[in-house]
Amino acid sequence: MRLTSHDRHPQLPKDEVKRLLRELRETGSPAIRATLIESHHGLVEYLARRFAGRGEPLDDLIQVATIGLAKAVDRFDPDREVEFSTYATPTIVGELKRHFRDKGWAVRVPRRLQELNLRLGSVVSQLSQDLQRSPTIGEIAAAAGASEDEVLEALDSSHAYSLISLDATQSEEGLSYHEQIGSDDEAMEALEDRLSVGPLLRKIPPRERRMLHLRFFKGMTQSEIAQELGISQMHVSRLLAKTLAQLRAGLEDEGES
Amino acid sequence: MGTIRRVSDQITVRIPASTPHVGLLRATASALAALLDFTYDQISDLHLAIDEVCGRILATSNPRPSRLDVTFHVGDDALSVEACGDTPIRQGEEFFTTFSKAILDAVTQGTALSESDGVVCASFRLVKG
Image 1 (cartoon, chains in turn purple, orange):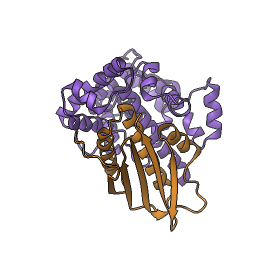
Image 2 (tube, chains in turn blue, yellow):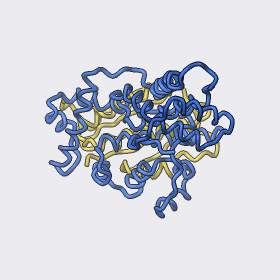
Image 3 (tube, one colour):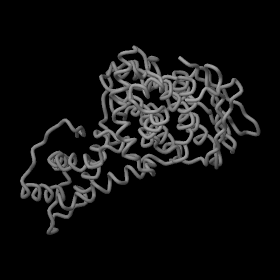
Image 4 (cartoon, one colour):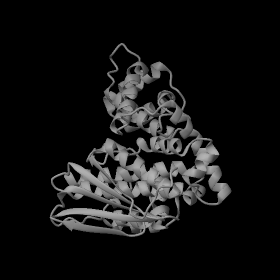
């Protein structure tokens, strides 16, 4: 099952959805389940977008929403007189809300900071290019026409969500819903074998694994990684913090079991 | 930002050992790093290192600490951070895993551990790039 936003899936007619849901109930077929999930990608993306702009990358929100959809598919009773999408919507929204709650997103980030934060992404990228190095806070503030305090506040707010729990147990889903991927990177494989986090690493999406490898084992800077992967430095920074938090939470789970 | 900066500048932040409060550590760290004109890359690294040592304290202490004391030493061109829980490390537990050592080695210049009455303090240092 692919969980990215880039795939486009055909929507099924309502009758067909009902029929598949019945068949799923009878056969438990993973293929039918996958078809149902894929065919509701539009709904998932629509709902995920409603939660965008709170500091979470849309891709992540879509993954969370897909988990909600999968739960709805599993729980839906085809004999009910209600459309599946009507039933699924609150389940998906619930999953998204829980996601923000679980991440300690206690404080709503003021719009002013959200806007500045959005702007900073491109300011940091542009400055990194111009200066051929990572900019200082002072340089970012000057370029963004904001004060250093405002820049710091906005940057911190962008990290607020990724601070997943030092204490909370990240749900298992957090790691396991990612595709299991075969590794063709020998260095990474050798690395995994040496590490306590090895088994957990294998559950991380390839891009995030690559990032860990480049930053912590190849010694590349976050700016260099951003260039290499063609994404913003802020995104690299967020993803690294988040992935490490997931690994920590995963290790803790293992330790307790 | 201000220029009041001396070799002896030292700031200690004491927080309950729970998630929402760790944001305060990051905010403090960012502000101090900005004073030193650290780059955005380094500030991000600083956050990763703080997360890692605090995470290790929580993971290796028994019973679970109730608070974390984190002290920032602001030098002329370096920031040192020391984090301590308030409960002893679990018997026979390795404080740094291979992975956390790899993380800290990549993002900091020098990590150290000190122990008194079983309570472990982990510290690291970031030099302005």
